[in-house]
Image (cartoon, rainbow, N blue to C red; front, top):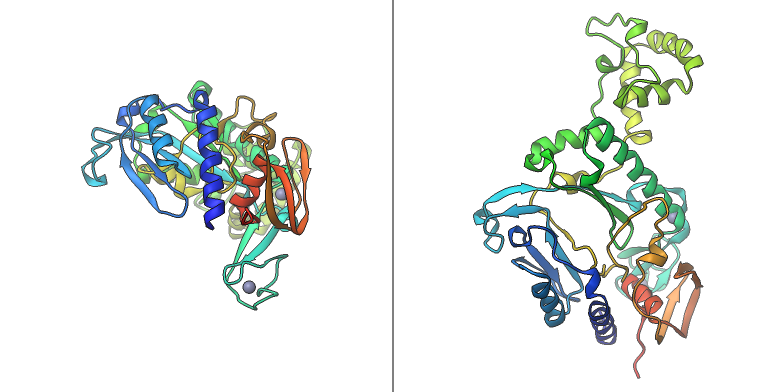
Length: 376
Ligand SMILES: [Zn+2]
Ligand SMILES: [Zn+2]
């Protein structure tokens, strides 16, 4: 990152933390957690122990981090190297990200930045200026992306509360600050699960490895019509029935066809359902019991938006509620072929312009790599 941009972001982030200490707290059982942070232009520093909000605020003010993290795991000795920490348990966390949903809107709000010459362009195979093929994709997710993720979150919630019997009081949903949401399950009986057991849970939630025997066919390959799922069944049986039959009146006709097509075809049909009705959680995140997650209330340096708890997921709008940097005017050089909306204001598109925008929009575009603070 260029010197001017680095200075601007460090100052903006520091100001945000100074103004919003009320939003940033150490979580419960802080002394058992591992913390970590990154600075702009440098790698991760981990294995930090913080006891109180005061320790955390001091860390933010002295180190000016770009990103702050806290473990889902609880340890006897959180500041020792991983092998010596003595793991006790870990909250169960799910990550759902817009980039994993393959939505058709994505191409409309994605551009490319050449890592050789920094040219910003629409999607090409090579850089239109220097012909390099080292290109980074930059996406400014839209409301449709956010709605898509919310839909997945609501499906996940249903499985957690209905199928896995998790008390909704133990579930907390947060906006990650960029393109996704994290769902936290704390203080549940699932905290003790290791990585392998969490992987079984992931298969269940994503509807992976479903077998025909579970949904109507028996081992001897002579399916009985009554063993096929029903629309009112609990758990995956009901969801498969809805997907397979559409409505109660079509059930009988579809079963006849499924039986005629045979077990292998049915197996393929069930496998394809992971894309339509499986919940699109990131497996690597949920199976990791030693991971550090962005801290609630902290800024995400990929966007300058805040990681925030969503009290009402359906109404939550990250582009107004999580955009908390102030609106002092800032002069930037910007080249953004994508338009976006923050705090109910439209911005862009801009083609190689020098303009003045509110600080929150400047920080957003600089974090995304689309703008820079010009030399004085
Ligand atoms: Zn180039
Ligand atoms: Zn979109």
